[in-house]
Amino acid sequence: MNFMETVYSVLVVDDEPDNFDVIETLLHDTGYVLNYASSGQKAFDRLETFQPDVILLDVMMPDLNGIEVCRQLKNNPRWKVIPVIIVTSLSSKEDLAQCMAAGADDFVSKPVNGLELRARVHSMLRIKQQYDDLQILLQAREDMVGMMVHDLRNPLTSVLLATDMLRSPNLTTEQRINKIEQLEIAGLQLRSLIDSLLLMAKLESGKMVLNRTDVDIFTVCSAAIAGFEAIAAQKSLKLIQTLPEKGGSLSVDATVFRRVIDNLLSNAVKFSPRNGKITLQAEYLSTGGAKIQVADCGPGIKPDLKQCIFEKYEIGTLVQDASQIGLGLAFCKMAIEAHDGKIFVEDNEPKGTIFTILIPIENHQS
Ligand SMILES: Nc1ncnc2c1ncn2[C@@H]1O[C@H](COP(=O)(O)OP(=O)(O)OP(=O)(O)O)[C@@H](O)[C@H]1O
Ligand SMILES: [Mg+2]
Image 1 (tube, protein in one colour):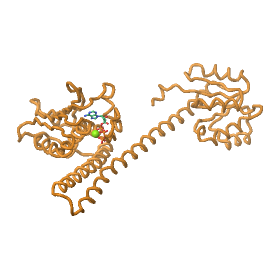
Image 2 (cartoon, rainbow, N blue to C red; image 1 turned 90 degrees about the horizontal axis):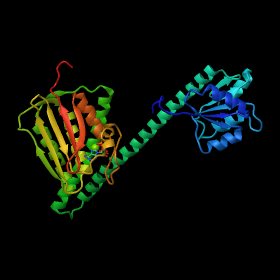
Image 3 (tube, rainbow, N blue to C red; image 1 turned 30 degrees about the vertical axis):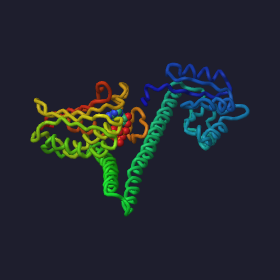
């Protein structure tokens, strides 16, 4: 979230409405939304339905004084992250220490100075924003770990089941071959997930040095297609390849390039309905470099999601019974950009998607 674009709300708690008017005047050009509560109890009532980004709290109030309000706020897991700025005419060190002990985050002395008030509120909002951003990141990480464990567990369960069944002496040769194929598919899924994670961590850390060699697109693409034949057969998908003659070459990192193709094919297979058709098309360009396209007849990608699916952990539209972690395309984008290339998605006709990769001829200066 962008600090500059967010509208922040401030709750002012003071038994004197005149004091609220002063604060409102001093903060009027900041764009903050100001809310007012005339007692500690009213503040708690308001907090039941809305969460401000910062609280300005008077100390001397009848019934519930500010220090007690602050203590109760900071003892409540729902509210303790809201920064509290005590607005006080108290100035003795003991009083300030008492406010601190109650959990106050900052102070402003009365009579309130506009410049100081704005600076202190701004500083608390910045800290709160950092906290909120970290929470979002933490939640995303937690979700991701949960999904990853789930995705590692599924193929692992297949491996264990298939191994167990292979022990049975009553299996026919066909059943045995079937189980071995299942084992292979599960193994490939596991390897693909782990490879994606490792390669992406390397690319992200900037420590990945591309190991460019002259690669024959025909060889890589037909090997990739062969790797998906078993999974495609399970969904009765037709895999079609239109590849250049054997013997040409493109200067790329062969492992990374193969993983990009694998990821695009994996998506096409995963998101295609049964009996669908998937096409892998590749050609060397007359300008040097190459163009590779993977087309499917699946559900397609909504226009507003065409950019963001290339971000890490973005899974676009949820699809039933499909594992969606959101790493594949992020990896593809990083990998292709590391080759100074481009990757983008367009609609297929009448339905589905076409992912296109353009890899330019290697620039020896870079
Ligand atoms: N060929 C496709 N057809 C329809 N939707 C697609 C296709 N490819 C990708 N998507 C959408 O984009 C999302 C992101 O794809 P990406 O490959 O990054 O992650 P993923 O397939 O969900 O998980 P993984 O990390 O295992 O690849 C998918 O979850 C899906 O919603
Ligand atoms: Mg994917």
